[in-house]
Image (tube, rainbow, N blue to C red; front, side, top):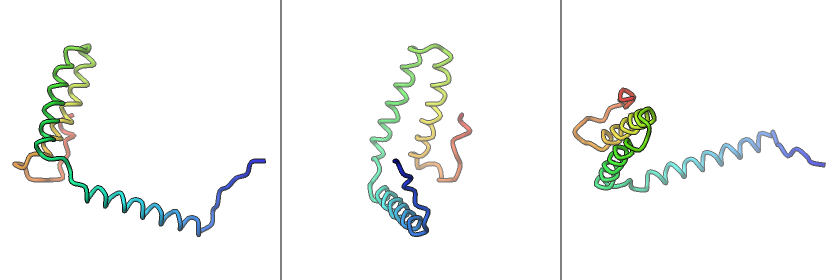
Length: 98
């Protein structure tokens, strides 16, 4: 006969909370300790992605190409803005491009 192995005790709840907090702390510290990609590599990948998007415009129907291209360009401009140092870092988002 199958049984229900659920446990609603406070001890089990506290144990899971501690495990989640420790796990998330390890993930956050791991991402903070690992260096990000270099500026040259990110710029090269961004230019490559833009040129690929422009090349794919001719391979799709005009409706699909327009929506896909607009979305990808908005993402690319947001990525470009985060790489540049000539603009001050603000809490502004890139939703105005969409």
